[in-house]
Structure formats: structure tokens, C-alpha cells
Image 1: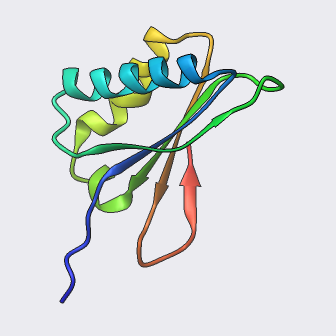
Image 2 (image 1 turned 60 degrees about the vertical axis):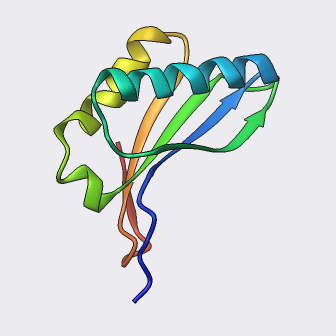
Length: 101
């Protein structure tokens, strides 16, 4: 049996590299402040001058149902970054469908 690596995936869209770095640091600091003991992996960072900054938190269902702090993470990031769009997507490894909040 192969053990899976379970983590919160944080995908960031920003107008430049420095903003990507800053938003990643804020997301990780918020996770630490909330005591979330699940790795937060920054993945698929993208720069685009033509769109607003955004953070998408992709959370496995297995983590979302067991950890109340997960539900506060997007709100906490949004408090520190009110100018960006923050959204959460819950997904199941066994089922490709997902729910976006």
C-alpha cells in the first residue's frame, strides 16, 4: 500500500514575482497562526498583469472534515489581503468532482 502525501495546495495568481512571494508568505503565516498542522504547498504560481491577484486553496476532503481551522484559513488570508480574491476548493482523491466555495 502506498501512503499518500496530504497537503493543502495554495495556487497564487499575481501581477509580478514579488507579489507572488509576498502572498505565499502571508498564506503560510496565516496557516501557522491558526495552528494548522497540515503542510501548505505553494503550487502553480502564475504572474499575469491582465487580471486581479487571487489565491485558490485546494483542500482534500479528508482534511476539510477533520480540521475546523481549515475553514478559517481563507477568511484570515482575506483579512490581510482585502484587495485579492480568495477562494477554497474542496476535493476528493477518490472522486474527481470538487466543490468550490
